[in-house]
Image (cartoon, rainbow, N blue to C red; front, top):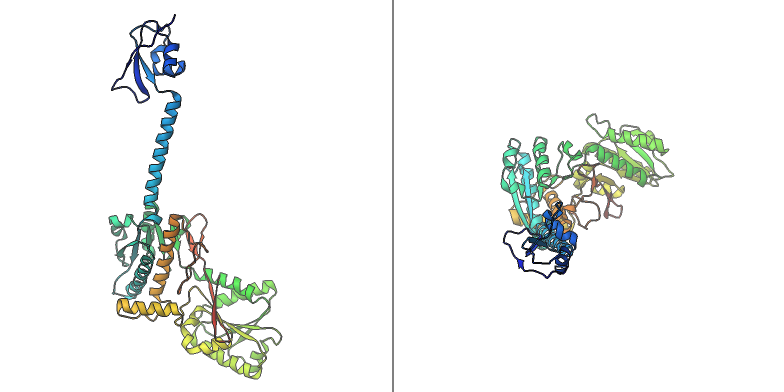
Length: 449
């Protein structure tokens, strides 16, 4: 029996997958209707569940749902998915910190009540100078600062809506504020930079934390490792300086143990030893490296006097001094001896007052704030500049994938180099170490490890 195609009816209430409705005419069949609308019989029946009932007959006047063909539905779904993806990508791009203003928060004791506040105010000024420098390069930065003094209620500070909008927070200075800040930055996916020495066990679990400070044990271990490599063919002389207050003996003891395990030469002498006994500690066939077990200026001066006398009587001796970051405080007093004895000083920072970058920074600081930086090592304003420049430039270039690894971008630090490594499954720790080398030709160089 051959049927003709009937009229179609459009309903305002029809489901989204139904394009129209069809009123069955005399002699029409399921096959004919399906074919007329470009459907399979299965598609037509699925759109009209009553047709699946036992004993169903197609009758004149029945109204059938006419669905979109499967190919059309798939195309529509693909188009909707593509549109949703494009909208999501555009939203993500608009929210990507690389394509918008970076929001920086500073949560430090910013006051003039005590030394903590004054040092952090200077540090904050350096942060502002870094922001100004980056803005001249086209990096837009919105800065928010909170005075989180030691007695501050950090939870109250974090209630400020501006805090949750930060991409990067620098702080805190006090360990007791870490629990709240760690939870806060994890919740809002904010990067947290801990700039100074505090107890932060949250580093082991919170991947958003960057810890700049390195413990003395970490620095000592790294120093010994690089010492053993650089001076592996030398003769080491450890001088006991009879300083009962010194903690440097921990370093020299660990160094001696490592040298002994490697079969490297090491002799211990004393600052009060006779000239003959002192002289016998030095090799005549190998370069000598002298290590004191104190970082104090007074003992260093006596050691230089004793070594000068030894050198006068034995000009053929090859002597290198290996010191501590404390020695950077005594540069004005012992600079000539540093040069004379090819001195190496390990440190996590280097303030070079003679470098053009340092001099330019100091001049600009004086212009901006009508004062000089405090006579401290490190210089806190330069530290703030280096930290802020490093992290803000990193966020601007790499977004929130920035992890502070070496080589991500070439930042010529003024005083404080930074290089981070992941700490297990937690945050990132700074692992940079410098050897500052005063050469006999009155030139200087720095080795960054």
